[in-house]
Image 1: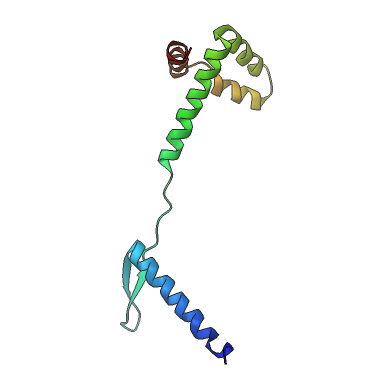
Image 2: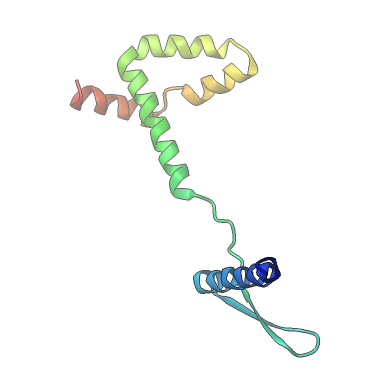
Length: 115
């Protein structure tokens, strides 16, 4: 007797999920070929996590600034120079790790306020 109700319970769960999605995302109405109006949940577009990307970039600059402050400009530039003489991947890393104005500024802030 319990297995008879399984397909009904499955359909009921699918309907409940669809209604929950319509409550969260909104509804799109469309008219079928025979004139029946169908309500479907609105598809959410994939959004790019801009906040996460900005936090990652800020953390990268902070890390570069910490390394520059900790190693000193001469040692830091020597190590970047070693990377520039390496493989293509190391050269890409050297390009990313070169001391730019933001890195120098963050290193100055670290040296001023944290040391």
